[in-house]
Length: 160
Picture 1 (cartoon, rainbow, N blue to C red):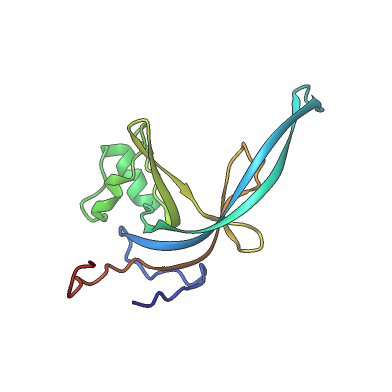
Picture 2 (picture 1 turned 90 degrees about the vertical axis):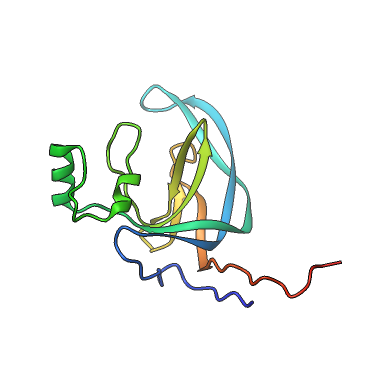
């Protein structure tokens, strides 16, 4: 089974309310952090230093689970989405009960009894990446390509 890699800009055509598992070719960036003197705001300065980049194939998801403004307004008034809304929108409520849908690639992970996710957001140059405050906005993961998550065939014989 040959894997066909696609550019991140060639995103899957996905019906609204759906979520799809895909393979992602990702560069993982590893950083260290050094603390220095005081900055202009009187707080300690922090320097983020790139230590290395590792390329991996990982399981990602692509989602089209954003709610429309009308659906969000209905949700605020009735604590549920209208019956005309895609059913998957209910699965995208955070701990505070707010809708946090995604339209794009993301990686989900489990921690302390909950499910969380890193969204791949476009930079000004169009690169899809994740970042956070700890890295000072530097990329943590950069999505280079994606492929369909294909289930392998049942083999004719088992390996010996």
